[in-house]
Length: 489
Ligand SMILES: Cc1cc2nc3c(=O)[nH]c(=O)nc-3n(C[C@H](O)[C@H](O)[C@H](O)COP(=O)(O)OP(=O)(O)OC[C@H]3O[C@@H](n4cnc5c(N)ncnc54)[C@H](O)[C@@H]3O)c2cc1C
Image (cartoon, rainbow, N blue to C red; front, side, top):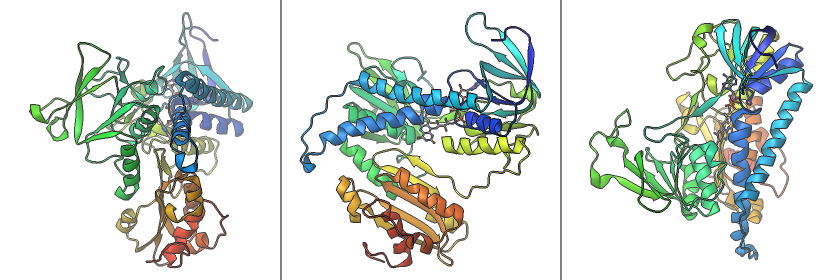
């Protein structure tokens, strides 16, 4: 480890080893560039350590327990006992396997790994401070930099993270005991995914959301089965409320969370005219705040490098992932919405290729997104109304999973596949799926959009029987007016 004021140099400096940064570093290594990847915490970033992977591991584990308990219709009588410590050990093992894999892949691609926190000193230099006693700091000169510092959860007034019993998503994914009750503030995808995990662990869950519906941005017909199943799990929804404060209760382990009708809360979080009898008071053991995430761009001294951000702190980039400074790039959550791991990785690859002199650019037609609720929601491309707003004459086709033989054999047949296409030439413009394995099924439709495939192409591709993927083919046939296993309108 270098201590003190020694200055070293690199062709490509990557700050942050999440899915945007480590992918950029590996791709740059493959292209024979001299790369240094600086990470202050853990390889794999939010996604592998505190986000996508641990949340999906716990969703799967709690699903297994829930499905076993609910399989009486199949002749299975089970009463699973959950050992939370064992479940968390398994989840941590998955995370460790993946993060050590990232470290090995970086090394195998000749990426220099540097542990520490980077801050810009000027437009060609960062200072990297190493954590731990006597570790000091060093200066690193670079030809090109890729900023991939990710995002952090947004705090709301009066709910400080780290102030037990207020949890952020990272803490909620590492609890040592199952809380009896949990209030989740925010019904976005992170709040909804974790609400289901805890409901399946047996926690009494209430979701508070300031808007009048869950999962803002998704069509009502996609959200309906999710809300229904969440309600069946015993999750309560308090829509149109904003959590404003909490206080300890005299005895017991519970706290009282106070929420005001959303329209009475002012911009700074204060209560304009709290009308007492409209106020909500919820007694709970823990409260999880999941109201959104913000870019980590304020701790980098960006001003020293001349890199600009927008008003929300996102670094603005062009189609080559380049910032307003020619040789500095930004990728992943810090470079804007959608804050999704695969979007960051795609940007990371482009940034590395542009630096290597390749004619790369972000030119994908559609960005898929998945909500891993029960059932899952997956979307890609345009919705029907977005396509119409963009000037297309649209045709749509739909296929319900209750008409799918495979879905019925899994015992999970809520939901449907919907395809939106151009009515004239049949090009697939978008798709949405709610139901079993929506997260896997959406990939075929993403490929269809990227390749410029038509409804006819999807419908005439022979799909294996019995599979859920047949629903994709049938939805395309339905749009063409000749689905076999559902009525054509
Ligand atoms: C609970 C949860 C569930 C999620 N589930 C999904 C999902 O299912 N699918 C999906 O696509 N996305 C999901 N996400 C979002 C996903 O985690 C992010 O989109 C993704 O991690 C962004 O990648 P990134 O590389 O831009 O940033 P990050 O993964 O946040 O990585 C940034 C890294 O930079 C490091 N860093 C920051 N500043 C410095 C500095 N100055 N010096 C050195 N290092 C620094 C940080 O320590 C961090 O490791 C989820 C997020 C959460 C919180």
